[in-house]
Length: 204
Ligand SMILES: [Zn+2]
Image 1 (cartoon, rainbow, N blue to C red):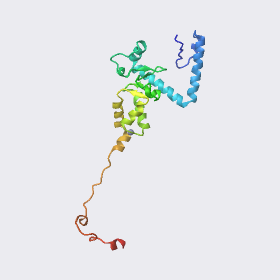
Image 2 (cartoon, protein in one colour; image 1 turned 90 degrees about the horizontal axis):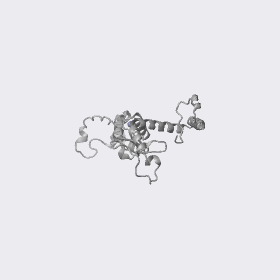
Image 3 (cartoon, rainbow, N blue to C red; image 1 turned 90 degrees about the vertical axis):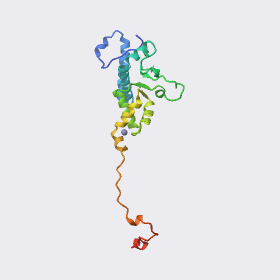
Image 4 (cartoon, helix red, strand yellow; image 1 turned 120 degrees about the horizontal axis):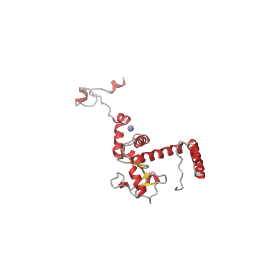
């Protein structure tokens, strides 16, 4: 036991016969308080759900990397995320190691969360970035995303999403131009001013 006690969802009362009585009581109390907080605070609930989804996706996509990083402190040589020097944060999410720890930017920007190129979560985040940046181009979407997430091959994925956005397709289309008719002879023939019309005609 490492001083941590994990309560799995859904909460079941038969587990109360657990031998580590006090630890269990403490975990149950924490669980109840977490549930209360989740129900009362919408922002906290959204953040909690997001981080859980990230952990699930990373657990599936970077299974070997997580295993080796925990046991040996480094990821396998052939791993796609090796050059990102991945690290774990306090809740066990894989983040980019990076070299900007001395900077004053926030933690999420210093160490963005690593996500695979093709996962439903990555696509949802790209979709959200496109909406939050008011249907802007790939570069602005990338900047927005990278303040929190490092999606592998993000450039390709972002460009693909941008190309497929129906709103952007509709607004990027050029409007058709009306084919103009022939100009009248008086507008083409060189002549002195007012020779083909006069102010008197206009005033009447
Ligand atoms: Zn769009």
